[in-house]
Amino acid sequence: MATRELISTGNDLAAIAAVDAGCRFFGGYPITPSSEVMHTISDLLPAQGGTAIQMEDEIAGVAAAIGAGMAGVRTMTATSGPGISLKAENLGLAQMAEVPLVVVNVMRGGPSTGLPTRVSQGDVAQAKNPSHGDYKSITLCAGSLAECYTETVRAFNLADRFMQPVFVLLDETIGHMHGKAMLPTQEEVKAGIVPRKSFDGPAEEYFPYECEHDQPAVLNPMFQGYRYHFTGLHHDKKGFPTEEIETCRKLIQRLEDKVELHKDEIESNEEFMVDDAEFLIIAYGSVSLSAKETIRHLRAEGIKAGLFRPITLWPSPQDRMRELGQKIDKILVVELNIGQYYDEVQRATGRLDIEGLFKVNGRPISPYEIVNKVKEMI
Image 1 (cartoon, rainbow, N blue to C red):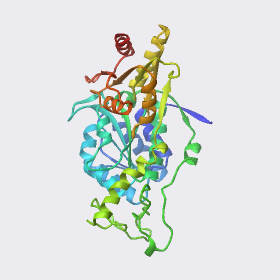
Image 2 (cartoon, helix red, strand yellow):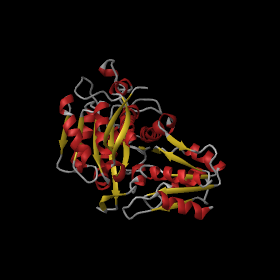
Image 3 (cartoon, rainbow, N blue to C red):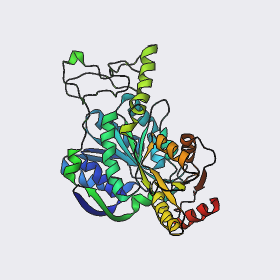
């Protein structure tokens, strides 16, 4: 596979990836530590015939991005935790109306304004349910500079495949990290673009929300001759509001099933030195880099440790975690929060004896902290 080398930051790579993946609209508002995503994409989009708009606030930013998605354009917004809180209502609209959108969240400390310039993974639980109601979120988490690029590209394809918002989680450390990344070529990325489905029959036969129980809506771009309705209310096959009992039930069940029944298309994870592991560390994002260094130290001392890193956080790779939980006796979950994914690991493995190493003071977790915790558990 042909590759290219870029020296950049995680935030900049996410912006570059969006443009390479065909994103032609960005609506957002600056917020630490994600602002560089907006700065970079605003430089890149005009040359591609695209548009980047800094709106008056985070709410308007996501609203504009959703509007572009309704018009059939690949679209993105980027923010940090407080911005996601402000965008929540409109994210619910995009889930209900089934508008594809990529949301990059560069995590910082919280709640509220928290620690704006420090690292955290405090938005993991929020990413599972970013808005109220029943639906199935899709959330990817980059664990390297290269993945800041590749997971953003993947997010656009998933958004168009499942017709809903897809989240890409970075954290302050990986967003501001500066280094070399080996990336696929632009030609390879373009060849792998999966366009959203469209209807090309007679207008009177077009019912965008009339689809199989496990499939997304087929929304033709606005202004191209097909009439239908966008709403955040429960709606019928044409998109108009309804309270008909069975129509409402089927709609909400489909929002769940279109993701849940196709997890094989979404789930992704990395396993590092797991084959002979007698001790398993579960970590994601920038923490996984410390975990890998930890494992090298432990292996040098004869301790057979391995890493399981979920790349898709939601839906979680629960089946593989369950397999490893049945095989490996000692498991440690390491996070920059107070166990937001730890609960999911317990649920997936069915075990209550899993231990955690958590940190919430805005500083990264060093390999030596993890080494010491592992030795306490042995």
